[in-house]
Length: 409
Image (cartoon, rainbow, N blue to C red):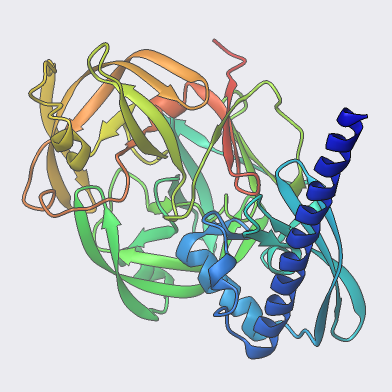
């Protein structure tokens, strides 16, 4: 009898707790409805999750896109409907009305913070509730692991060779080529590159054609000099619109729509944070054995090394003077900025949760005129020599990169 009484009390408290959470979530849906009517995110900001996303975008880009949704999407009413709990997610259904009535969903974490919602995702090409489907297969040329795509721009028939560079947030071509193609400059801005910052100009609303497949409304950065034997780079433009599978065995990139995606279960999934615009992964780096360091590295197919560690982390842990044996030294050059580097071996790199590589070639960045004040927002990057050991899947809906074993040895 006593056990039954305690069980009844526990169930009562649990019911009261759920009712309190439901009441709070109902109030938050009312604030979302008001945000659409006011065309501003000010009412939503206090309960947006740290990993809040709109489509494939996080961080400042997600907030920018959220305000675009609130400003342009016509919504007359939004009313709380019902609540479901799925693992650590609170799934809230709401009834909306514009020209027609519809049901939409909001996804809150265990702290009742909003992670994403269907209206915004779908306006940015993502439907989490449909099956993913293949939309294109694009051949590529591999140069020492680097991925080179053949593209054309707008109405030009001139084939361009662009480096597929996941370390870049967008697309870039050199100025002489941009002038030849007649690209129209819209504005200037500053961009971060390895070792420092540079000023670039931007051309908007371009269409990129890849093997008969088109990606429209593309901004293209224009820089001064041609590098690496290519006409420029194409960055995370593709991965932010499609699930992207890079197959070194076939020398193909296959694109899938965002949605329920169950292929390549044999891959080692590594979570990524894209709040900075790049794909950043948690790692444990041991340059010296028994001296592990927590670090964050970006996935950078445009970098021609295994792993580079940027100056702030090198300085913080005194990596160049704490027993590291440099095999050689040199310089890394990015967009005209040259920074000294030192080459050697790291005892171990572990990408969390479970991909481990021992005796990995590592590049440690030294000091330079630009590097001294450079704050990259990450500890380094994994380059193409590491990445090309695997086929890999980039899924920015689920926020992971899956490293898949090569079929060919």
